[in-house]
Image (tube, rainbow, N blue to C red; front, side, top):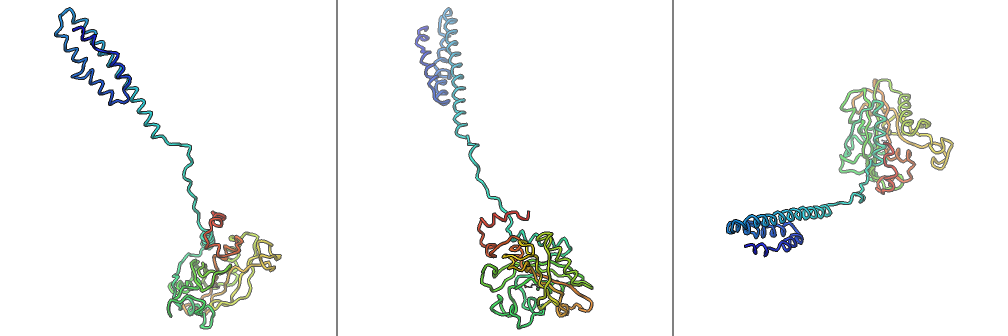
Length: 345
Ligand code: DAH
């Protein structure tokens, strides 16, 4: 029986353990020696068959084998687990030093920024923001604004007509009529929005552009009031050092009508190339509301008086930022857009 023990090759078992490459393999080795049918287990069972005087020595030896194997197996298991973990970690690792995917920062378009700035100035003076339809009735766009049949703006070649009654509005002035028709004076409104004209695009024209309209109606409104708000608007929009000038003009819906100029920001009014040597730049049209316009909306022109003004937002943007070509506002060239990112932030 003792020869059994001699036959037991501990060296071989230890070698198998140390050569195991993964825990599944190790498990098979463990079963072979220490499992229920295992070699060591069956050797232990044989103790009973031995003469009593041999049992002690035999048992001690087999138990010694058993302990050695158990120790070596659990040691090897720890090593294999550690290695497996290391491999997992290497596979999962990501490189924190890699540059991230950079996202471009967005910004409001220059025109939107200018619109917001203009609106903020008029709102701060108490003008309420109202909007009107872009598809407008001929009546509101022309008739009610005292614009006669012979006016060039009414020509088929100048205006997008949908049919005899409807058109794409050529200016924001019809909002004046819509507001006055639905309200009683006094009123003070600001109305921004898109307008359309059959113009071929060039450096100063687009078939679709933006305007804003201002209307104030109350008792005893005078040109002085108009000049007052215009000065506030121009100084806040273009700078404290800028001056305004009113010159005679004509619009069917105002009487008298004024063309408003702002002093040139480049030469300061002495005359240079960008103002055509005059020292002044035209920024808007304005005037005192025509009595016929008041009659058209049922206001008594003997009681009510008012001023109105309107201009193109693109024009204001071009003057403020010295743009040479209105089409740059539509081209979406990123170099242009980037230059004006957050100019009004
Ligand atoms: N509607 C005019 C245009 O498109 C601009 C304008 C002029 C508006 C005088 C007004 C005004 O309110 O009083 O050219």
